[in-house]
Image (tube, rainbow, N blue to C red; front, side, top):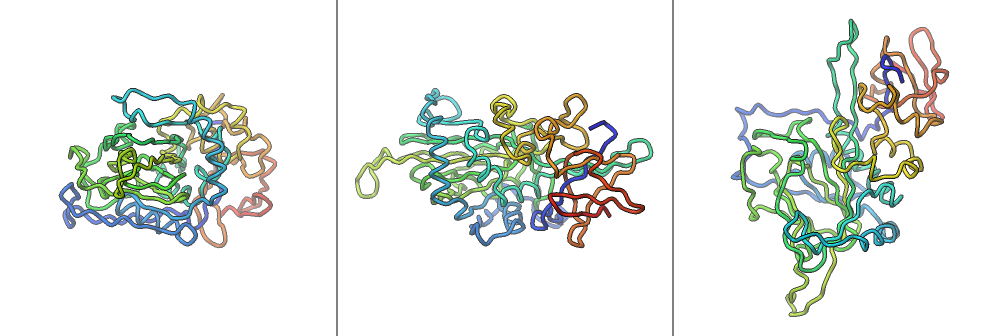
Length: 390
């Protein structure tokens, strides 16, 4: 793609649409602080919940629980893929960020296709991250043309955690510190505040006793200078196998102590592993926490669907961040894909009309011959369908 070309995105499903932010003026609402009442942490069923419901709950509390995301077969596939990598990990010194009883595996999109497709590309997860982490540059004047650019979220990291008996609490922390984020207190959440979102899926039953992730609801709305965080305010995300927990990276959170090396209420010692599959997403123009280009072999990335290649980072962040030889790198990895196209930036179009609704869109390039021109509109064949540029 030349610098004068603009990518017209694929239609985002209606359920993935970014909700309108309607924050109340600060002077009419109380700014949130550690002394504010803690908001309710909601629980949803993966088979019935909507993206809009999840987004609303995250904005209010900073975290939520989703039941029944993965089935037994998917969990078995995940553990088969990841257990050898966990077994290869060695203990870190106990003074480090992770307790020495923890084992980790990284770079999971190239190590487990199930992890890539069922966790990283989970539709509910993608809907939430699209809604909260998509950035739109409305004012981008190039000469006498204003070119609106949409930057979609990208993969930030992938980690599998195995936390063994005897592990201590991980210190409460905010993950958006990696991007040097500071926010003052606010009364309500505003779209655009978040640098990232985390997603944890339980491979085994997760309880307060065996180390469930804990977080402070509502702490994403506090002044970041307020601290230190108090353990008395934490909520423990207790999960059944296949359940998930989402948390904004602006919330205080941390892994908890695995106390199953100690006698339980019956006086018995029953050691338990806490096994969790995690991933974070961040904004498309921020640096990734885990270097996806080094941790994932290129030949493995080429085996992934094009949409996952883009999430990993092999796609442009609009208007033109991440190019190789002034071209979209996705052309190198998916040169024959037929669901993206090129349009000249001299007469850019910002939206496709889909099912009689104007929908903001995000896509990539294909050959110019894929574009058919008419007097007032361009018609594009996308995955066998016809979309009209309004």
